[in-house]
Length: 166
Image 1 (tube, rainbow, N blue to C red):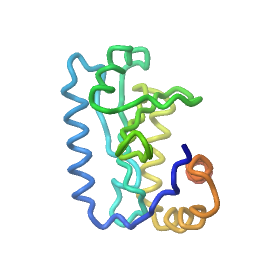
Image 2: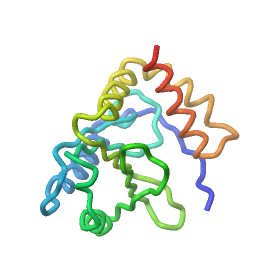
Image 3: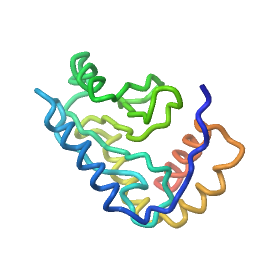
């Protein structure tokens, strides 16, 4: 099923997104025998004034990706998080959807290993977004036309990679 383009709005209610993040954080940290070391609220829902589609992005830090076993996947499934099976390099991604017909994401978990280059890039990327969210807002508005959701996500990622390499 082809997902609709994101409906972008300005994040004028950061407390709402913080509460939603805290709810997800509590659920993750209290999972029985969780391999999760810590979490961080990332992305545009963590930035006041940022243009957002409303998906809560959560950076989930684990000692090892191998620690995310089948049992952990089942536990996340019971909380209505489902693994996205794409060619992710050195990370696992799970998403929660508003329903399983439209597949509109409400929460996305980015599971990364502690002490990894990927983790450092995520943290650098979040700092860069916080400092440059207005420019990113302009860019997101410009690319949110006539492209698929996959292309939109790839273009956003490429913008961040370019900004981090400067």
